[in-house]
Length: 185
Image (cartoon, rainbow, N blue to C red):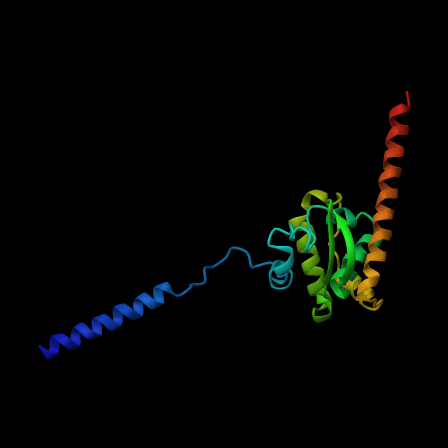
């Protein structure tokens, strides 16, 4: 009987060990390695801007679907880089919502490559529809140039207003050209 008890105990321990192993999260091989920008976005941005980039109405502004249009002008590319690098603070409006919060300068703890990666992920994955045709990824050397141009949190809104004004002028210019083109016989 003692012998059967030990055998039963050994089987029980083995079964328990197998159960723990089977329940343990297993890594599954992926056909494609995870995108560094996606990993950084999840790590640094999701808690405020949410996994889909839609933010939290009235608290954290959305990153989608409009950020893609910012890169239509050089000032817009620079602005996006500088927001990640140096943060943003103050009252702003977007999509009919007012936001008055602080985005910390997360880019100061990231490399130039990592800042470029997270921005390219946000632009390509969350703003695909608003990206201009021919969009070129943000490069680490662009980030390095902007890192040298340090600024405070509150200066970001002034930059944003300049970018929005530049985009408005660009759209008006396109509309003028379209109207002139349509009126020609």
